[in-house]
Structure formats: structure tokens, C-alpha cells
Image 1 (cartoon, rainbow, N blue to C red):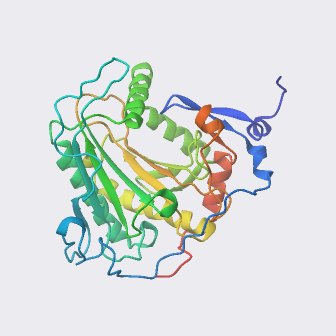
Image 2: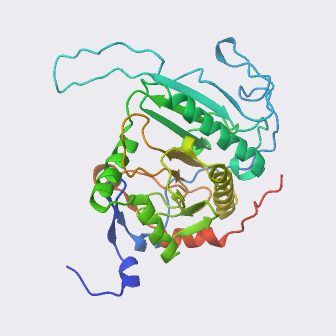
Length: 351
């Protein structure tokens, strides 16, 4: 059954939105924002006041697993993960008894990149110059790992906060380089290549032009980047970072783009913290073109996937229909962007 509604009213009723990057749909249910909440209520995450923790293995000078010691670094520090998910070498094959039981060896590198020696900081509370050093280190790692001929992909990501499974609050991220392209960037590469073949222009460049024109989902911007709540967002306050000038990989960023990325990361993380006046949890990561072969139309972009829904203590759960059917969200992308735009651009907690 369908009824005739105005465009605005239609967007405030249940509907589906298409994600061209994943070629999947997401269900939007705006009326569910009024439902009472009697589910789990977590703990708010306060900003840390501890600048050095003698028990933290990422703080300068402290011992790590296996006898290694973190040096007395002053800015950014990178090392091979003491508990890597993948190893530099792997078996040549993994035999199985059936074609239904497929397995392949995987090898690569897992690295940890500490943003800053100060245990209390996050991207939202770091100085712009310090974030630029992090961006430079990311670009350097991307260039170094992508140069290895047997590796296919470099994935940079940060899990911020215990709610997102971070095992250590010290400001840091991880860098995994793998011999195979992971499923998410592989799906995005296929979608962007298909769009480019059909239209002759990059998918994300065309999408950004639409967002700049409509403005309703733009959260913040600078001369090099725009941060939007994407039309197809799944997580309540999910955002997408897009460069104004298309570029395929982080290692190819111009100096202006590296500086601009540092600035836009600071802008959006400050707004996240200010939304509920908490140290906002999220998973953040970058998708660039795979390191081997041709990937026409692939545009570098950054994803923020934060779990908070209604407050600093209520999060979105991906269960039930999301696991068995398709993703679903309550807050519209336009409403989420409006709320993020409305908060102050200066962090609520002084350093």
C-alpha cells in the first residue's frame, strides 16, 4: 500500500535508501525515534586527565609484551603489533576435503601507530600540528607497505573507546596490510569501477557535487575536504569524509590535502565529543585504492562509524532485522547532520 506525500513528508516516513558504494539498501524508520528506551544503558566515557600511565604499554618508556620497550618518543611512534592478527609469512596452501570448505593462506603486517605520547589525548583534543604529524605518518606507512609486491591492500583504522572494543585508551590506531583485498574495499572498488565504466566520472566526485549543492547533510568542510552524513548512513551519526579534488590513495595526497585532512578530522571529532559532551566512541578508517592492478574511478574516502544513538550512554545495536535482513536506522541522515552542525566547534573540555 502506498500514499501520496510531499518529498519532505516522504523522507519522514519509513523508506529505503540505496548505498551506491556497497550496492546495498538501508531501511530508514524515523518514527521510531519516539519509542521509549528500556534497554542497555552504558557508562559515559569521560575525557582522560592522566597524561602518563606507568601501566600503559603505549606510554613512552614503558615495557611491552615479549620484552620490547616503547621508546621515549616525542610525537608519532610506529611499531609492529605484539599480538598481530596476520603474520609476515604463511603456508603455501591450506588443503580441505571439499570445494565447499574453502580456505586460503593470508599474510601481511599489523602495525600500531601512536598518535602522541600524552596518554590523555584524542584526535579531538590534539593540536592541529600534532594531527598533521599523524597524517604524514599514515601517508608514509601507506607508501612503504603498498610498495611490497605481495601485498594487495593497506587498511588504516582507529577503534576509539571501550564501547568499540579498544583495549587501550592511549591515542593510537592500527595499520593492517594484507595479501588479499578485504571484502569492504573490494565491494567499493567494484561499485566504483562499474559506475565509472557507465558514466565516465568518479562515483564519489559526482556524489560530493550533489552534497555540496544540497548542503543538508554537510557537517563541516574546509578548502580540501567535506564531511557529510551520507544519504545511506547506517550508524546514527555516521559520517563520510570526501576530498574536493579526487585522489585514489593517501600516499598521493598533496601537502594541502594532508593539512586539510588533519583539519577536517579535528573538526568532526570535536563535534562528536560536543554532541553528548563525552569522549565519543567510534571506528574510523580510510579506504584507498588497492595497491595492485588498475582500479578505475576509485576515490579515497574516510568513514566514521560511531555507535551512540540517544545519549552518551545509549548505543545502537546491530541485531535482529539488521543481522537477518538489512541495516536499519531511526534518525534520518539529514537530522543527524543538523544536530552535528549545531554543536560548538570548540571542544567542551579544556585541556
